[in-house]
Amino acid sequence: MNVLKLQGNPSACRTAVPRARGSCRRTGPLSGSKLEIPLWLAKGLHDSKRRIISVELPKIYKEAWRTVFSADANVVDLHKMGPYYYGFGSQLLNFDNPENPEIAQSILQTFISRFRRIMDSSQNAYNEDTSALVARLDELERALFRAGQKGLNDFQCWEKGQASQITASSLVQNYGKRKFTDMDG
Image (tube, rainbow, N blue to C red; front, top):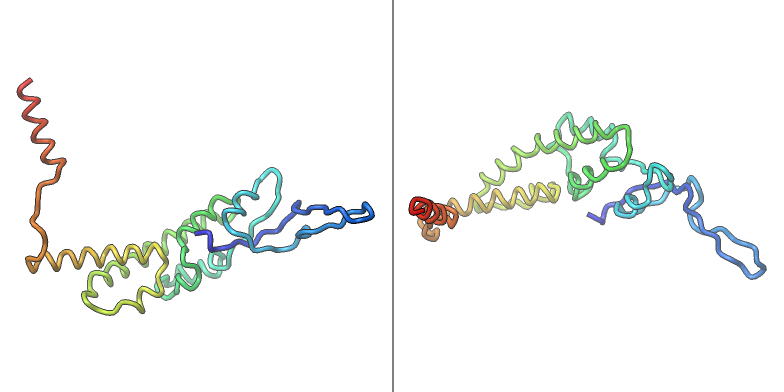
């Protein structure tokens, strides 16, 4: 998740470098400038008391994109916009932002609206090329799609009689042993 970046405004993030004549020259970002920094660094520098940086939301989490997601989340290429849309968005909620409730609701509704299509596609694409569909998915959605495909493939093997022999779970076996020992005592 450290590939994605936030824009931060450094407020107190300047250093002084000594020069030959004893005067100091300021280096580093000036107050009010915008920098792209990794999420882990932004989390470390963002402190509501010291105000080292202020965090600006990435465009995909702003109001305009939230409107697009609420209209039809299935048309958006989440992988292109940010391959970790859900994970990164949930991490953004750690920053004090007045839009956090709307962001959280948008992320949840986006997931809900895309989930059914992802699972339907994974269950109905047996031995088909799914690269075009998977290319548009967030990494979490890709993992769900792979899990659905694995379940479908395992079921198909079981139907054809190619599955390994079904055995009792170790929990069930242990439960039976424990029950008999309880009766003895």
